[in-house]
Length: 119
Image 1 (cartoon, one colour):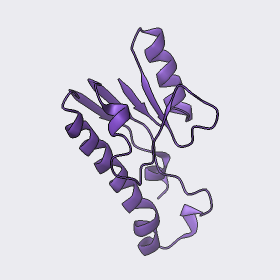
Image 2 (cartoon, one colour; image 1 turned 60 degrees about the horizontal axis):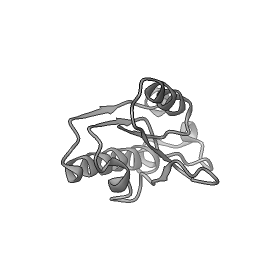
Image 3 (cartoon, one colour; image 1 turned 90 degrees about the vertical axis):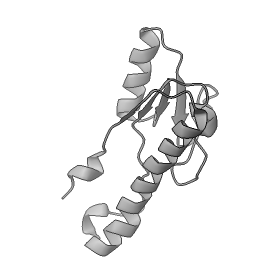
């Protein structure tokens, strides 16, 4: 299985549980740093998940694009659409396209983010 956002709170717990249950896990993170067991992927880049998803039967999409410089709560609705909603929508479309490209994925589990709860 593939877990996107494996370095996050939910993703890291999910990876741990999947490994404990005997699954082979392809984990993606925003920035590899010194971690040699994960694959670096960017939600905003088409095809960046292709390699991680290749050969997987299941995908847990728990990643979300984050802009650590902006304050999502203080922007107006029009800027929110461009800065928050569109990148998240592009991200899930990129994951779906990678699942289709892999031709092995039987199930995609998509979790929403805290960004959905801010209004």
